[in-house]
Image 1: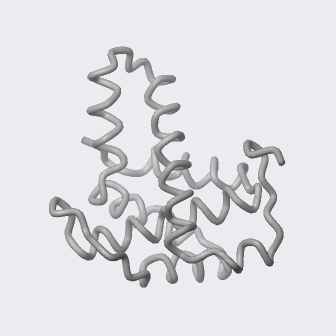
Image 2: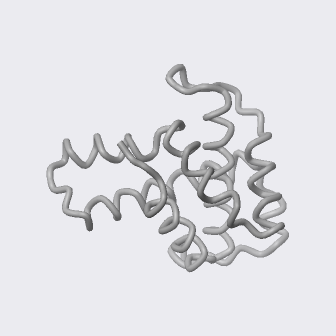
Length: 136
């Protein structure tokens, strides 16, 4: 199995919970943010960490959904909706319920796209987020 070029079968994807997709998507999104920041010239470990946290917080991911949501296909929108409606056991104290739900939706979408091997689509959505969102 090549875990960098995954192409899960529809049955494998259907067997995963929305929160499992969000778990994968959280890692995918954070790796994309870290790569983006390194390539933008952030060089100190402390600076990279602070910047990364600013981009991957529930509030920042919630803001990113405003950019992504209008771009989604019907199938992607369904994954996004399921992610938004997921019922996590806990919500971090620094996140509102609404922000956390929208962040989970984005992470679910990114996890689903990653597992389908749709890296070009991931790159397109990520580029739209980075170009159109006002970041800290």
